[in-house]
Length: 361
Ligand code: NAD
Ligand code: IPM
Ligand code: MN
Image 1: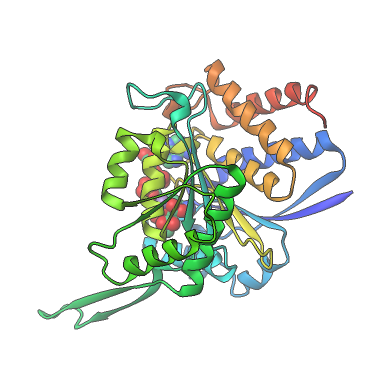
Image 2: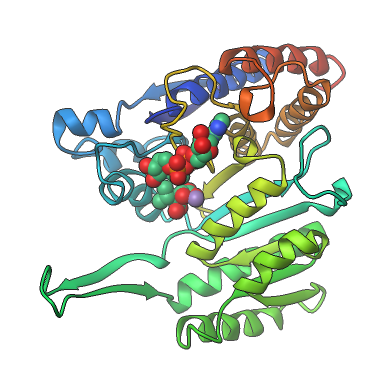
């Protein structure tokens, strides 16, 4: 029996509520397979931990996480702790320390999911965002000079290393090549006259190694517009940390809502654990009510199964999510339903169990 050791950082707000459902789904998949199991270890880190201990995670937190096969994270950040502290001292530091430089975020409109655009074909919204995840605008470097004085100046530095830029673009080309799809680069060289000029140059250079991959390149402002007016242009997309953050929320809106948007923070070399988490945050406005949509965190769990090499189970989960959306009976309020978080998880597990009989498990 193979055992996968998964560190669970449920985090803040609706994090623990939605993560519970993902854990239930993962355990069900393991039970159906019978050849592997999950060993979940829960770490109580987050804003409550901060109010007790004055830090977001244990001093040796990163050391502790190193021994796991994966990390499953809910959400981080809650009113009461400044966001730049809560996020930098937990989520962002994990992405950086574990060199999870690829953030994979599918933007795919499943059947039954609601797209706010009126005249769009379902198959036209099928993008795969590959977001640089460890540097760029999120370098964390900057300065705050003459604080509170009349001549106050704040600097926030972007860092685009040759290594960091090349590897994310190469990863995106490899993905596009494997999938037989086009690759779009999104940047902003007209205004960001160092970082994005460099990004575009590296994209050009690497593209020469992949003559079989069709490419396009857009400025980020135009890309945001085109995602709404002509989404089918975008297949595999590679972009910087900040642009990827913003555009994947646009993508979430196109593909059925933030409650459905999933992401994987991957260290492709597998030197460190990868981390799976929904795109959304802690949703303080609905936290504690048991109505957070668990489908994004469950979709992220399916990405974890893909990562472990069980693509058939990843697909089993996505197919069940689609079936649940089509059925439309057991959905949370953000999807105009009246079900609770756990009712959605339970119904999904029923569907997975039924469907597994027709899948080769
Ligand atoms: P948010 O994603 O938490 O919420 C935005 C809106 O979407 C809210 O109205 C919320 O109720 C709704 N929403 C989000 N997820 C939902 C779900 N699963 N089901 C139903 N509705 C859902 O974004 P925000 O309000 O900007 O941020 C809240 C906190 O979360 C902040 O502290 C922020 O820094 C943090 N945050 C964390 C992450 C993360 O941990 N990966 C991501 C984004 C934001
Ligand atoms: C995300 C989030 C994070 C990010 C925040 C919470 C730091 O918005 O994962 O999309 O910007 O990467
Ligand atoms: Mn975001």
